[in-house]
Image (cartoon, rainbow, N blue to C red; front, top):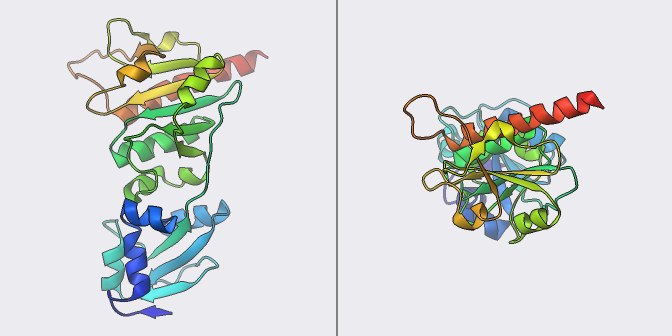
Length: 254
């Protein structure tokens, strides 16, 4: 099927998914690029439709396909160099329940979609069991977040906090480590990440909220130079891979 005008109903539907309000109304989000579309299909995601530009000749998912001119496709694309394919995928219903021995990443107000996507990707790479987002975080399903995830969104559970995730973890004996540059913070390498653990990464400008800090163990990453702090995604990566290292050491001893 072809779309020849921006006034087309389907074009308007696809365009609406670039906005959070539109995604919520439709219960769907956009996945762009050859690899990302393949990853979504391999993960068993439910495709609503796919759109390709007039020159695209690659594999396409099993769903209604719409072909557009390059000019129209570019109006839907969120990338600098579009690969000529994107798809609308149903937003899955995900609920994350902390399990004994699990490793989770908690994003406390991470507002940059690039940072959020990178954190989800890193949590996936480090073998975490899930990523939980506080209110105020960037939208998991925004095009920029999805792109930064590089397919990891389809490999690891990621969902918004229902309101009591950290409380439940605390009640169940989890270690909750929050990256924070406070006088009370200990070196992040001293943490016991080998058992049930939550790693908290805070907002880029304001850090971890006081509410979350009150039930966490603050840890800090040493800074030898004159930088005030590390990028949120970089800090999260260091903490996650310290947890990975500790868990690998324990596993090797068994």
